[in-house]
Length: 163
Image (tube, rainbow, N blue to C red; front, side):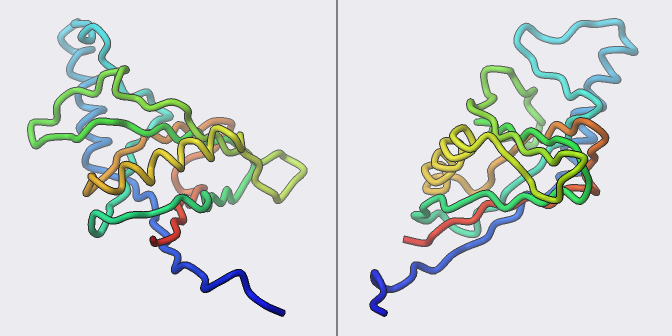
């Protein structure tokens, strides 16, 4: 049987929990509470169920989004929101306008082993990542865990075709 042409090499890039940045963002919330201050206008404060993840692009390259590779080891839900933020060493505050739309939402129902997702939004979000891979060295994400999920229950990666 004839092939449609040579297969493009694929690159699987994991989203990695950035514990230091998550901790720094939680310290910001605590600091505001202790001083009785409010967030800056438009500032996004990290909620308890949110964690910062990163995707490191080894080199700037042309990539074509292929698919999300998300595994949930128990029933629950995770929302992956990208940020346009390039955090600087002074940990510039994250503003809500820096959150990218759409978000990718993945869930697993109680009576199923399969992971479902909002396919159109996840695809659009993935395609935006292909564009960002050309200019970014790192990309940050907020993962929001729901329905009993936590970081230990999730493995997430983005699969790209190398062009």
